[in-house]
Image (cartoon, rainbow, N blue to C red; front, side, top):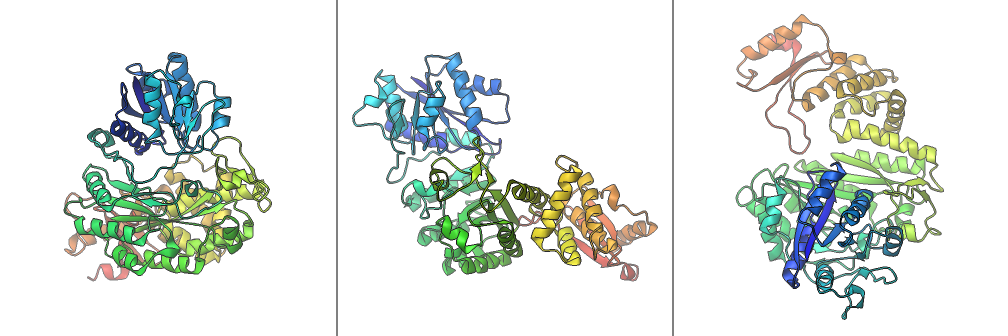
Length: 565
C-alpha cells in the first residue's frame, strides 16, 4: 500500500511537522506492506498543482493534517482525490477534526476515516489494517482515536516521547524554512478558548533527545527554530536546561544568527530563567507571551489563572533586557470585556513596550469549552472557519468592527516597526491614549481605503491625519516620520510627502563625507535628511539591522554645529 501523508501550509516559509511525526510513527512500527511518504503544499497554490503532487505515484491512501487555516482547502482536495481515485482511502486528522469527527464524516462523503488526537501509533495501525484488507473499526485491540460512520472514538492521548521526526528527508525538505521543535506535549492550563489543555496532562520528552534535535535543526539552514511546547516554562528545570544548552553552544555548534522562539507563561518565570535569558546574544531568542486580557473577571471566566501584577512586572523586565524580541497578545471578544475594559487592557499591554502587541479576535474552536458550553459563554460567531466572534453580550458587531480597524492601524504602525516614533509623538502631543489613537486612526484608514495602498501612500495618509490632531507641531511630526522611514527602509529614500527642497541638505551631505568620523562606508548605501523641529541632520548607513527591533541605527548631528566641527 502506498500512502501519502499530506499537509497544506499557510505559507511556504512554514514547514509542517505533523506529517513527519506520523511518518516517524509508521517507520518505527513498520506495518507490513505499507510504504508512506510526506508531501506538502500551501493554501496559496493552484489546487490543480497541489492535487497533482498528491496523486503522483497513484497512492492507495491519502492522510490529511487538518487545521483551522487549511480545513476548507483540505476538504476540497479530499473530494478531488476521491473523484480522481475512487478506490483510494481518504483519512483526516488534526485538531480541526478531532473534536467534531461525527459532523465532518456526515457532511463529507469523500472522507473514509478520521483519526482523532495523536497519530504516531494510530496511523501505522490504520494503514496496516487497510493494507491487509481488514475493516479498521473491527480491529482488536481497537485503533486509538479511530472514527468512522457509526463508530466514534475519543481523541488519542499517548504517553512518553514519540519517535523523532527529524529524518534526513525532513531536513532536506526544510530548505531554510521555519523549523518546529517540541520537547513536551499537553498544557497545564485549561483555558476555555483553547484546545491545548484537552491534549492530556503535560509530559516532557527526554532532555538528551531535545538537545540532539536542537543541534540538528540549528545546523539545518533554518533561520528560526520555533518551540511548539504550549507552555515552555511550565517545568522550569526542563526549560532552563534547554536555554542553558543553547547558550553554551550558540556561536559554535549552533550557528550565530539562528533564532529560537518560545511560548512562555509570563507570570511563572523564575529567577534562574531570567538569569539565562539575560545572557542571550541579541536576536538569539524570541519570546511569545499570551496575556489574553488584564481584566481579572475575564480571566476567571475563561479559567485562566494569571497573576497580572507579576505578569506586567516580568514583561517589563524582559523588554528592558533589550536582547530579545518580545511578543504579547490580547484577545477581543472574551467574556465580561466591553469596549472600555478592553481599552484598559490594550493600554496596559501597550505600555509594557514589547516589540509586538497582537490584537486577536476570539475564535470558537471545535472542542473548546467556549463552543461546547454556550450557556456559560454566550456569543455569536461565524459558522465558517476560523469561527470568529461576531457579537457578545458585552461587544456589539459595530464595536468589534472598531477593534478590527484598530488592529489594522496597530499592525501598520506599531507591529511592523515602521512608525514607532511617529505614533509615540502623535499620541503624546495630542494627549491620546494608545487605544483611542489606534481606534481613531483605524476608523480614518477604513474611510480612506488604506487596505491595499502602497507604503508611500500610507505614509502620506498617516502624516495628514496626524497633522490634523490638536497639539501637533508639523515640523516635529515630520521629524518623527523621517526618522521612522530612514530607520526601516534601506533605500534611504523619503516619500514625496516628506520631501523638502533645501540647498542645506546637499551641504550637510558633503560636510558629513568630509569628516572622518561621519564619512560614509565604501559600498554602503546611506540615507540623509534634515530635521527642522530639532535643527539636526540625521543619517543612517544600511549595514545591519538590529535583530530585536528590526530598525537601522540612526545618527544625528546639530545643524548649527555641523559646519564648525
